Length: 198
Image (cartoon, rainbow, N blue to C red; front, side):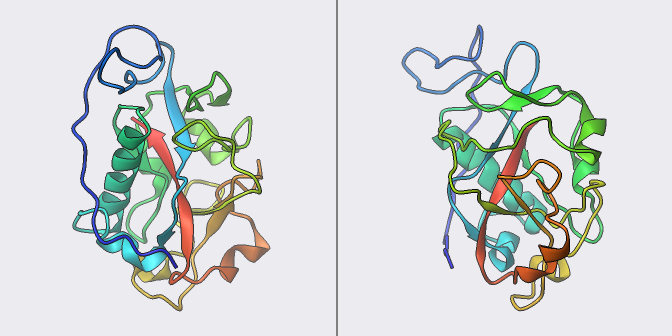
């Protein structure tokens, strides 16, 4: 299990032109001229620590804070939300209609619009914040069914021995919910997060 004691948000900065690195600052612009980006975190986080490790007041604000910190650490800039559900908030409802979305650091389109999140991406989400391909496939906390609605969430990411729905970076249809095996991940373990630019 990976324990993260504190994370600090880096203030978003804007850059002009296309998706490239800004001169001097090392922070990329806020998405592509035609859409937004998605990545999977290179680091892992215990499901139960999502309540607090990002500095938020609940698992969703903390997970969002993690995504923003990781994105800025990877020189992506932008504003990000974690693809994560609780019993009172569905992941798909947390995403604004600002797409299409592409793999971070690439031109591979993943989702043409918000509605496609409830179907499947057009390509596996297999690049991390640095643009590195993730191999072998990574397990990702989602708490979210293929419909984009909440699945199992370890009692809202508070019970270590409870189970949560998870996805795989090596899957298309199972990107957010691997199906029958979705109950095999206990929240005391460490998995990755999907981060969606807004």
